[in-house]
Image (tube, one colour):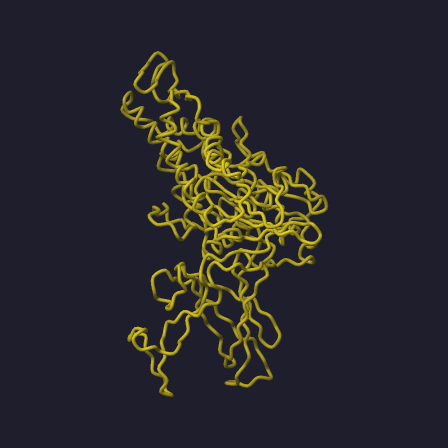
Length: 552
């Protein structure tokens, strides 16, 4: 939890939505509590989309950042030459649950790649903020709220924090709470409450956040809890869900459709022409498509076709390519939308009093997606609402969260958390290879999983699990922490579905009045209700922050 004293230390809250395809930012001055967006970005196109592309251009010989955001996209044609490398979608490399991702070129590490982008992104955000009321404050008075996908593991969250430190948003010596992490759906929920007139939830009502971005669609259901003072707090009422079915998968299908059409009239599609057409689709066609009308795409001159060329079989006429509403539905949008609808329905089945679904994120602003969700759920008396500026909901919600970190009162753990212990060996149940016979003759079972936190049971945001141990002075204490995604609580740390989360070591302080070899009381505190798992140790009344070494 964040104390009022810590809040008073920071006068400016900066919310950053580091996204798979686009990234955005918003900020507020605590004295006014009004959230302002960062709408202006370098090399911004005429349509002024209020977020910057999450894309980077590197010099291939030095792997130094040459351009980022819109500039990187505009210069991507140079990436076909030997001296430049264009990179995007690299947020996915922080998600340790994804398989089959190609290795990054040039030996660059994902954290370095994210840090390079964040450094340039942050410098621009600060320069824009200082054009307004933020100019009266020093940068050490800024607090940052960075959003992460709801389904990310603790290791992925730690990687995001490390990247932010490497980028210079904060330093390693800053208080831990100067940089706060909040899940993207939680941030969106806070924004919806502050911005939607339709957010008329009463005590006990449930609402779903459908955060549909470029890479993933994340869902969380919250229950409203009304305080005696009339303020709302949110209780995460079901285990959140997520799937890689965001708008980038619509883009992939559109790219495939373009290739299948154009191969009939050209032997090769120049990279620049393909990217120009895809930008037209992403920036105008995709958000405007509502499933009722055909759409037309201008053919770039670099494709080598003349305006006089026509081909009715692919809809080519007068310099435009026609896409029928049916082929856009069937070949581009509907397969991805069906994945989203299936995910929503799966989450819906876990609710008992769902009143509304709020769609946010870049894909959440899609007219077609909104329409398809509404078709399914308005007949069930469930409102489907898209807030104003849905693409900025997560960044704005992060800024609001920085002002009131207590808004999300309860979270639901997605894993079983525990440590590795030995326990009494049970013949016929425990494997013989786990059997240990101690010097005192007792028979123990190694690799047993000792649960700290059960999966799926709600935890208050300030939940702290405390365990007391004996240690021998001056020996440090080492421990390995595990997370399990199994349906039932695991019995062993080595069984399928159980993985190491981190190792931590508690260094022993110098205690002049304690003799070597003397037993010493040690208390370990673990905080699970926050977005990040946090560990502290208490020795002789002194609290020490424990450094967790996440497993690679």
